[in-house]
Length: 451
Image (cartoon, rainbow, N blue to C red):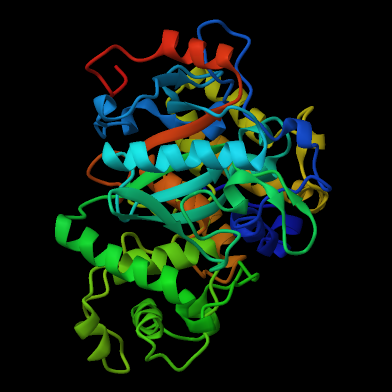
């Protein structure tokens, strides 16, 4: 029998979707958060580079993509999670010679050159803004796995660039704009920048599709979609739902807008824009120009928009990333690890005031999701908890979504099932001592997949 969700949670599940996507595409600012905590800190453990909990990690078994370590100069470390040895992150450690925007800009420009040359950054990759400092705060950022933004990667002249929603000068560039380097925003607040990025890659892209993606991305980076693709602040309602269209139609319309043939406004949040661009990359300009009102048949999403909780054994939910890593632990330990995901930790002060307010609002509503996790951790198959999943999904009107976290969650599934591959986590380190530690802990020469 499926566990039943508390009435309060059932009545307020819309807040859970806010939990899954509501803080995406946003960065903490210095006037809202403790700026001293907005950088990457090395672990006190001599045998570990970073202290990253399992709920911010990926299963070791999901890290199967080979990377060309000889093609770049940075050390690469397999960093086990703090609690579970079969979960962690493949970290590419990059030295930045200080924390000023200009110093960060130089480090990120070097990354964009070296990692593109080595094939670690490719056309169609997604770079996910990762904030490890959000560990040990509250269930709200834990379920999101510390991810707050999604950037689309494309290349030009052998170097990597990003194009994002918002389509503006604070985001679009060579990972060297304000979102990545920090600085004073147009509204006058101080953004602390981004010191860690997860790189994930769509499965099955061939050279032709990457070339098409490059063309679409280059065009939109130049024309900023003619002002018709504004930033969407309502993460709860995907554009296909608000416009009452199919995703085939919304992807086609985005293509038409990029070609200056679109007629409607198509606002999108960051991960929604990235998802649409990947789906559009299967199409030529001619196919989009010739498409009828039903949309172009060439549109091919990398993955379907996801429900909050998995409705069956063949799928995964937006809120289930930490669960996938948790399931790599011995069965006897899983119960306490569920508690770690949903516990309020000592680092709550690291949340911005806005994030903290939402976290406190949804904290009483975590009981239902926690029960779902506990049942799965105890070995209940998807069929047994289908009722609980249905209640979670009905609470958000069964509207699927594609949050920034959706890309990483997809990459955590088994080979043959996942639609996205985890490539690496880039971490910008401030000190020489941290870089020396990274070199000492680097994976053995000639290997890039953890054993």
